[in-house]
Image (cartoon, rainbow, N blue to C red; front, side):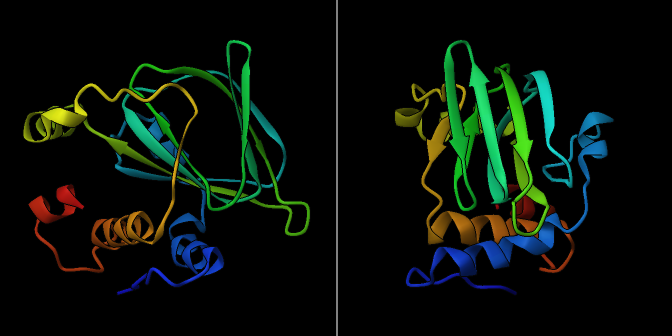
Length: 168
């Protein structure tokens, strides 16, 4: 099990997340298989026109850059940066491989509607917080560890119950 400590640099965090983005698994998302964690891997620049998010999601850029466009707004995200996207968000996305390695990698963690509803019920103070398209999220050691633990649980590496996997 990989542990991320608060004193570790961003490089260590990205190294811990990278095993979950070794191969492109977006076909699972596109096939509507409701996978909670999807890897996007590209070796050429790709422009995705009007992407509609079927569920709330957190996207973590691991390698390369991601440009998110909505309306007149444009933001560029680099390795170690995360983006929150609300369910139903309409955005244009450009994924650009890293100039040195020639690879773009990102993880997309989706949150099922029932899980979002349960979280709003349990923490009503957060229920008014709606992420605008492209909202940056601080990817600190705690969030990085949560994503790593979730990835390990989803990959069957943690020996956790289904409820623990959902919680992670």
